[in-house]
Length: 318
Image 1: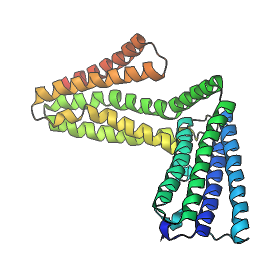
Image 2: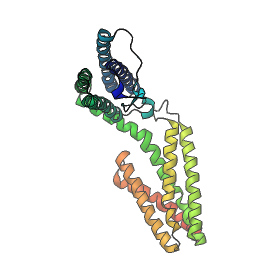
Image 3: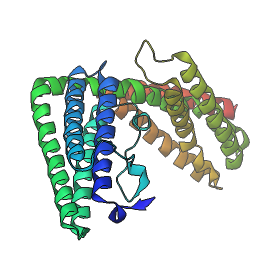
Image 4: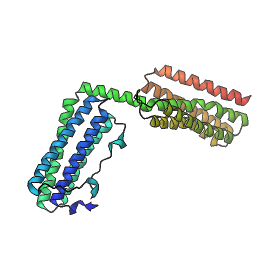
């Protein structure tokens, strides 16, 4: 890699051309990834990609006037300390907030880099060129604000934000809640049955750990294999499976850990307190994201938890 300070004016201009081309392609990728769910925002990024293409053409015209037809290949990754862009596939799924923030960051990073580089340069022509490029990036930001106003009026943006919330619930909250409920409720019976049957906290911990991990693996695979997301829009199957599996394990581990306490009655008391907290968290999530009545959500979850807990205690005490 080369230091930015070692680049000639010709190479700096070539670097700016390749950077504008890459940013334009990123915006086009954003537009393509958002078009199905968020058409207005997709149009915005299509316009921004066209703007980047126009800036690239202007830079090429300037380059031709000063240096001729051949443009050397200099990319961001070839220059030490230059800004880098995350590939679009690394930031999927493309949510509205994610791409809007990424676009703002792209323009901001480029502006900051050009200005810092200009302040360190002792060559007048390079300082002027870098300053001009920084101002061009400021204009990009102003253009982006204008495109937002044109393509995303308040009503459209509010509607897309509601769609984004629904997609988040569908792809993250639902599989996570299913796992948390299964892990928190289904493992109650074996954990407390083992505790009351043996009177030894360590035995209850071993049973709870095995039940939590086993349930997590089972629920994760079940969720991943149930739906590939192509028709329902529920997202990548293995992503949902991972969320479900982790939350299932977490739900079971919560009331299993207290049984590391050697004193039996203390371990039981702490485990019961953890169970109550878990059930309240589940009730809150159902109220917050699933549009359930807070009273109904609490009663339903608590009733299920109490029934499963009582089953474990009865079996363990018999």
